[in-house]
Length: 161
Picture 1 (cartoon, one colour):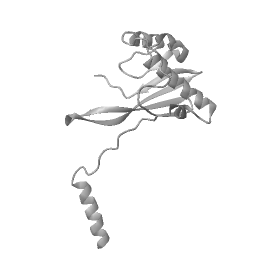
Picture 2 (cartoon, rainbow, N blue to C red):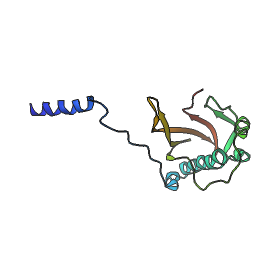
Picture 3 (cartoon, rainbow, N blue to C red):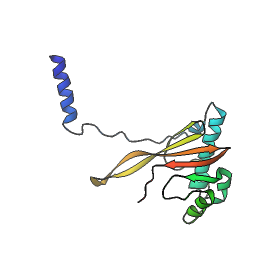
Picture 4 (cartoon, rainbow, N blue to C red):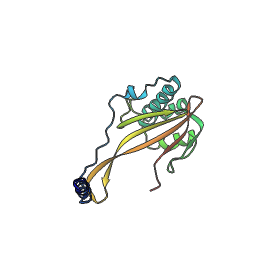
């Protein structure tokens, strides 16, 4: 009976309302550790994607796209066209080249590699729908497929607006 009362009181506490707070998603400070791998192929794939993100995506150096992307690059984000040339044309309209940073600037949580796939996860801060004055964190994922040492395909959670 005592155990039953304990279970009921615990369940009641959770049912009473938000007794817990979200644990904020935290970025990693040690990017070199994220890129490292005991498997040389996975390490190379992680480095390729990491450097692409720094130099091309964040740095705006579209002239480096051919170093990282296949010509037939496939894009699954519905707002960005497929093909390396189309990617460069799209991002050149608003991405101005700037100094390339030694680390990815976006709040990077992890880099995971398996076979020819690399996933970057980032902290994403979002406005609370029920209270626009409040924000919470969640995670954004970008996944890449590597083919012959270049990025051949990309996925993320973007939706048309």
